[in-house]
Length: 140
Image 1 (cartoon, helix red, strand yellow):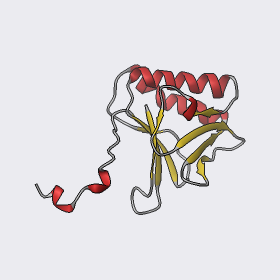
Image 2 (cartoon, helix red, strand yellow):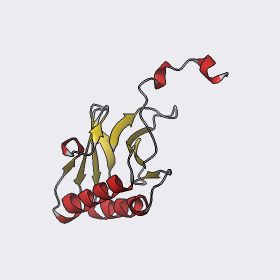
Image 3 (cartoon, one colour):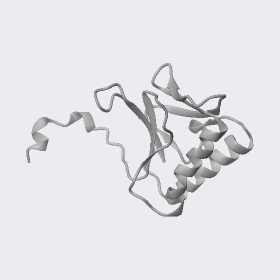
């Protein structure tokens, strides 16, 4: 599993922090980690400290809050996903289908009016050459 940040994905200042490139076993590990750390122990979860998660261009820290705020950042490198206990329980429900079978689909993990969404997408990959594509690459 990897985590990265995609800036201004649609020209309308919408951003995405995504958890991607994982299989069913890693989805189960992630779900269980959320349940154990946040729901049961009420502690923050820093993904940079998790062995099976590789940060690409950012870090994501989950934590409980009195209201559902979604993802916040000051520097576009360290992101905080702050939700209520109910918000995290809903997130667990949204992750559950990925724990039952391999999937090529994706899921946004909250529905909050916030400029940065959190996407869970097992089949996405990371391509360092993405911004090196030329217009004529699409003509063939």
